[in-house]
Each structure stands twice: as structure tokens, then as C-alpha cells.
Amino acid sequence: MTHHRRFKPRGAQKNDTGHDDGNVGTSWNKVAGWYDKLVGERGSDYHENVILPGALRMLSPQKGEKILDVGCGQGVFSRELARAGADVTGLDSAASLIKTAQSRSANIRYLVADAANLRVFQDASFDAASCIMAIQNMEPLPKIISEMARVLKNNGRLLLVMSHPCFRIPRQSGWGIDEKRKLQYRRVDSYMTSQKIPIQMHPGAAPALHTWTFHRPLSEYIKQLNADGLALIQLEEWVSHRQSKPGASSRMENRARDEIPMFLSLIAQKMVK
Image (cartoon, rainbow, N blue to C red):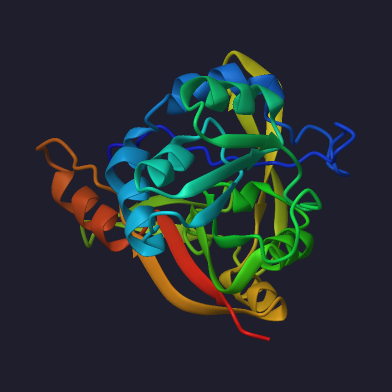
């Protein structure tokens, strides 16, 4: 396959004292400038062609709805929500990314805060919440899901978009080729075991600079949503929009790309107590 540059999700957390919440090196402050160059004001090509259109369609923001965008980064999805007429609050632990978001969208409220501790918000403050390509870089998952559930109104919606946990596991999955069958396949070496995995930010230039991602099986996400009174109501799997250039391997590459999804998106609804 024509290998694309690895798409890096984000959203690692710090506590309100500014120290990493038990995970040294998870803050994205130190790589905010580099990350902004990668994602930019409009998002990567994956954002523009797959993630943002799909997320907007699934969440279906309504004019005047109060929506919390958790792990908002530079505010790419926050701005899309605001364009749809929502009353948006963006939240991220990286102050430098929030500063960038504020410079690009002064009409949106942005806060530096930890997703695991949303005490700045009262119970039932929002009609919906989103977390786009960030949940797999956050921990502890129980506190984060619990806090997002707490600030949602009854029947409020939570949208989670992540790298597909079944197929996109850093260091534990990769592409292989079956020459005899002329097929490209996805190899998965470990799935059920939850893992904390270091991610190098500049593999060639600065190999020591890294942050963390957290692999969890899909069942762990669903179990935690249910534990906090959130019922899964919709799930979609999104493939890459890219196509290989014509060549000897393009057919099997495009087939694999169309059959093995990159992203998982789900909507959960807060049940009426």
C-alpha cells in the first residue's frame, strides 16, 4: 500500500496544577507548534474528507444547542459546530493549543482544563459533548467518561471519534501482503489487552520526544459508557478516502483501504434517570 503519514490523534491530559496526571510526558504543550503545522486551521486531509463531515452528520448539532468539545486542540471541530449555530465551549489541557484556538475563533469560549475533572461545569450543563480523535490519548477513562456524562442533560448526546481500536493499534498492528493471493491484509498482534504505548513525535529529528496513547478494546469503551448511564445508539466505521496511484499493487491496496476502517465513531445518549 502507498503508506500515508501516520495520523496522530491527541488529547492527553494534565491536572489543574499543570502536572501530568500520573503520566509523565502526556502533555501536548511541548509539541503544540509542530502539531499545529500537521493539523492546521482546517484540520488534516483526513479531517476535511472523513472525520469532520462524518462527525457533523452523526452529532447533527442544532442551532442554539450548548455543546462541549473535549480535547478540542486548535478548535477545528469547535469551529464547525459554531458554524452550525451551536453555542460551543472548547476544552483542552494544552494551554498553547487553546491559545491558538482562541486566535482563530474569538466567538467560541475556550478553557484549559482536564477532561477527568470538569468541576468548572455544573451537572446537566450541555445538550451534547464531543471528543474527536482524542479519547485514546486520555486517561483515566472511567473518570473522563463519568465527567462527560455528568455535564450532559438527560437525553444529551456524546460523540466519540477515535482511531479504530480493532485495527489501528500502535506497535501491535500493521500491513502485510499475501503474495500468493495478491491481497493486502491488516495484521493484529494484540487486541484484548489494554496498553499504554509511547508515540514518538519526531521519529528522526528528536527520537526522545514522545507522548502516550492508550489502547483499549472496544468492549472497554462500551462497558464504561453503560456504567455511566450512556446508551450506545449509533456506531459507524470510516475508511480512508485516499486512493493509490495506478500501478501493480494499486488494486489490492485500494481494496484493503476500502475494507479495513481507520476510524470508529459512536454516539451514546444519556438515559433519563
